[in-house]
Amino acid sequence: MAWLEIFVLAGSFTALLALGVPVAFAIGIATTLTLLTGMPMEPAITTVAQRMATGLDSFSLTAIPFFVLAGGLMHRGGSAKRLVDLAKAMLGPLPGGLAYVNVMAAMLFGAISGSAVAAASAIGGVMAPSMKEEGYDRDFSVAVNVTSATTGLVIPPSNILIVYSLASGGVSIAALFLAGYIPGLLTGLFLMIVAGVSAGRRGYPTQPPVPWAELGRRLLAALPSLFLLVVVIGGIVAGVFTAGEAAAVAVLYALVLALLDGGLTWKQLHQTTLEAAQTTAVVLLLVATSLAMSWVLAYASIPQNLAAFLLQAGDSKIAILLTINLVLLAVGTVMDMTPAVLIFTPIFLPAAVELGMDPVHFGIVMVLNLCIGLCTPPVGSVLFVGCGVANARIEDVTRPLLPFFGAMILALLLVTYFPQLSMALPRAFGF
Image 1: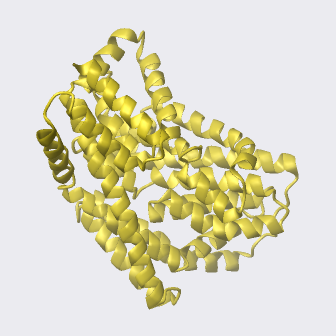
Image 2: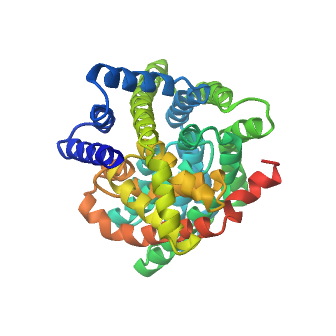
């Protein structure tokens, strides 16, 4: 029976995607068709609807709309430009300095906004004209912007880590946030190295050195935006508030900051709130249908059977983890990150735990892995946004992306096989 359910689920989902059905609807329809193999229509439809509703009945999910809104407010309020100005002052004088600036600014803004798409749009919109003026190839600048924007999904606060906490059965969000710092910074460092080497070979210019007084001024201008990270992460780790409460505090902080800066009009506030609501609706529909599919997978005992198969077929822990990473890399190219985390966490987490892997460590590995898929067609949302902002073609950006993919995969392998990189900070804080 399990094999029949697997065939119906995988076959119908793949067919629906090929027909261009939106991912959330494809997941819901495939889930319903799978249940129809073992029960009448009315109970099957009722079960899917019930699982979608109960799946969203989680307090931790309230953090998602608030973090989305906070990111939008920071974007509209001018935080992106201040972070770019700070990064230029610090890294601009280095060879190929604007490439370093792009990576650093995307990491900072991605961490503040919790959104790779927002980082690619905001930082790309500021950096693309500057890099063009300095003689940087457009396709190279897009490759730098797209890959560096994904680091904000690992560096907290991160909506996708909250989704993983839900999918894994309640792994500590504070522990996940702490675990993301070193892997995210390591990935950013590798991207900077690749960007610097490539810029040096291409002979890109440097920026003039900035006087210390100007550096201090730019740092002071960016500090209010950076302090948001201290408020959110510090409050969660110290136990002052939950992730959902921290997200609400982030919205209030970002709103006050944007209004004081004068970079946000009431019309823009209305538009930002509307966009946040639309984004939240899309994300939560994906969450609801994906959780229903996860329940069907558990109902068919697929995660347990797959975990047993991997443990029996694999020769070693290294080989099994490599297999999981390869599967997730393939999944990331054809599926958006949110449903991928919700569907494949219950499948692979049991095998990882059997191998002695901490669920927090596995969550960072999974998110870091799926970040690569955001930069690849056919569903690479960050790639599409980055190309759109710079008015570039995807086929022209593909080749410059390859060295950066190599850097991200190297970071992924290090994080996978050296758990200390993820677990050092959570353990230091008692998680």
